[in-house]
Amino acid sequence: MSKKSPSAIEELRVALEELGLNSSGSKDKLRRRYKFREQRLEEKKKQQQWNLYSLDNQAKIPLRYLLIVDVEATCEEGCGFTFDNEIIEFPCLLYDLEKNEVIDEFHSYVRPNMNPTLSDYCISLTGIQQSVIDQAPPFLQVLENLTEFLRQHRAILQPPIDEIKILEPSRAIPRSQLKNWAWTCDGPWDMASFIAKQFKFSNTQIPDWIKGHFVDLRAYFSDVYHVPRINIEGMLQRWNLRFEGNQHSGIDDSRNIARIINRMSMEGITFECNRWWLKYENNGWIPNRKYPPFLSKRQK
Image 1: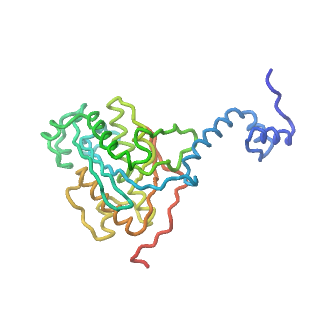
Image 2: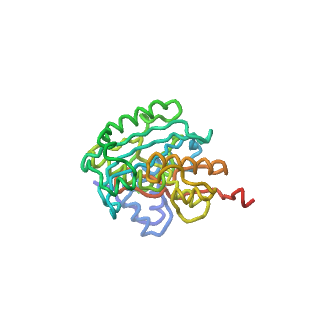
Image 3: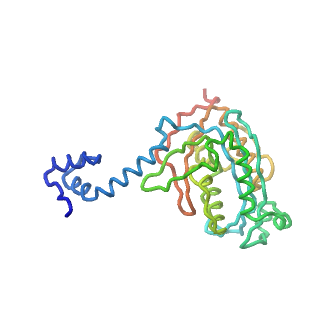
């Protein structure tokens, strides 16, 4: 026989307090909260798990290392983000925020599977030749090589990639993770679109150490300097710097992102994650983003 629900408003409040649930509100709200108490308790349990990843958590580990990524992918003229892009270049720069410099680089071209022949537009845009792609390893081999590259740095990446565990979100999205490193790219597209698509096309589960929080540098730059979102070349112009290398070259884009991070760090900017993603078409902002007031040296 099911337990009879309390009727009076004070009885409802006492019953909810005993369950550790919110006891404020109108009688109708209290009744509904009690009616769905099991669901509420489950949500509260999940929220408590997420609180471990909150920016307000005193155990939060500040970011020390950034994994800078700017992938290139198959494309055709006029194609949008619904196009079935496959990765053809995968760089990863390990940036030490304390030393304020790149301390190691990973770089590989990737042979696509579904559409192994690059379009003329793709070759012209990226500068990547078909002969290079024909000799490149497939994505799963590149993923294995990237994994080994990061394992070589397990002593400084805490926790190491093999110890990362991402909780599946309920109604709340965590605002930070208890680790001293994060992926970083220009905008959300590399992580939440191109890389996510590639795992989907490869019919391979995304490792926990890849998904989760990352730094969207374009949005972060915009927020801390209070300017519109601009591309890599536009961000460099803040310090009268020119883009070095070829635009839409993954490795050159990544190295120029590192130059932006270097300048921001010199001006006292502290980096934190502002995006999250778990799988293709499941990404978004980290709520309650907090950025310290910024005053550039030229304004002082």
